Structures are given as C-alpha cells and as structure tokens.
Image (cartoon, rainbow, N blue to C red; front, top):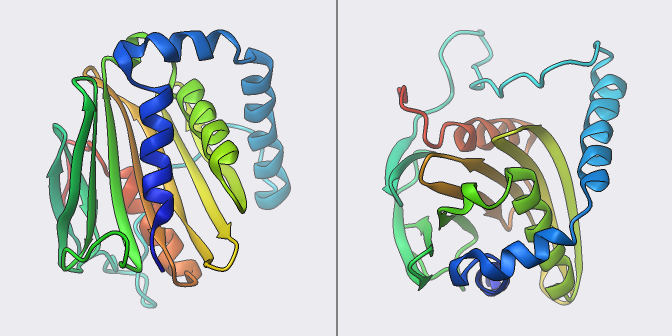
Length: 229
C-alpha cells in the first residue's frame, strides 16, 4: 500500500508549521483553549471507564514482556535523526526519504530495508520543527496537525489521544483511504529545548495488541537519554 499519507502530512505541516512559524501563529490564534481542555477531560473519562482507576497521571507505556513475565520482547535498534535518538524494532530500518521545507522544518522517513515510502508496508517518520516550542504547546501543534490531516483526507481519520501532558502527547491513528485500504499506528508529539517533534509509526498490516504495546513503548523512548536495549 502506497503511503500517500506521508506526502499529505508533509504538505500539511509545511503549510501550517513553517515559514518562521508566522502562519502557525495566526492559526493558533483561532485554536480554542476550550477544545484542548475538553480533549484532556475526555482522556481522563476514557481512562476511568476503560481501566476503572482513579483519575491521575497517565502511566508510561511499559516494555512488553514474554509469557514468563521476564525478559522484554524489545530487540530494537537506535536511529539518529534530527538531533534526537529514536528506537525502532529489530527490522533493518533504513533512511528512505529526507527533505527540508525551510530552515525550521525537516522530515525523515525510515522503512524496512530502505524501501520507497510509496511502496513500503511500514513507515517510521520524524518531523522536526525548530524553535516551535517558543510559539506553541504540544497540544496546539497536535490539534493543528489533526485539523490539517482531516481537511486533506479523501477518506476517514480516527484520532485517539492515549496519553498527554504539557510537553508530550501520544495518539492512536487509523486512516482509511477509498480504494486503498486502511493504515493504523501511532504518532507522538513532544517538545525539547530545540523544537517540537512528531514521531510516527504507520502500518498497512492489522496490528496485534502486543504489536501496539510494542510500538507505543518504542515511540515513547524517542529522545530518552537513558535508552537501553
């Protein structure tokens, strides 16, 4: 399945999150803080309903363990990209695409064996927006990206916030394009002293629960200075 959504996301983010953040600043003025607050409240309600636990800080995704409950099932590799280190699974991930929109925005795509993103069945992508943390919050950036993706989509987009705080948000994605099938995965938005990142994993395969747990854990390790495999 061609990853047309990669091109869509690049186009949308280039339009809304570049040009020295000037266009972004204008868009953000139209973003409702009430919407963000409602989104945060929705996450808390879902957590209470699904886990039947008191509301509180969302727990960090944990490394999946084997059936004996001992060794982690993570056997991954570190990838250096845009001033950070990300963690992938044990496939032979190679850089398949790289580009810059301007001095403030660059994107990188990794695929198994370096296959073209238009042909690959899995994709690990990183968008980096330098200096964006001084202009907007992570929640605003994620909301604007969602808005752009929905506007550009010719199919449907499911977007579910899994966990979030002031400088970090993890969302589940499911995208359906007419005549092209379905893709699912996750996107993590987070801020550093240098800028705001979006790290995403997309798969054309149906993911098992263990694969979902694995990739949520892997994405949460991006920019973790204590990475261990």
